[in-house]
Image (cartoon, rainbow, N blue to C red; front, side, top):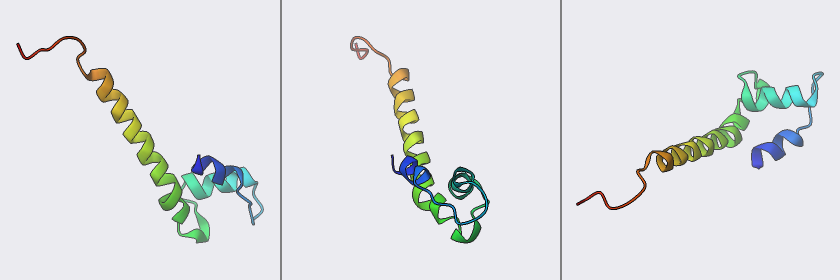
Length: 71
């Protein structure tokens, strides 16, 4: 939600559109003078949470269901 809010409310201060400037600052290496801090502080935690969720789902799907297998 934080990433979506930041991209949606991004105000461009250069000639390109708001969306393409936000895309450049949050998702590409064309970060400009911000030294890519938006990618480190906002985009990276988003990617981390997505990867964690995918791992949790994969573990839940791979876990055997059913009775006790210790006998």
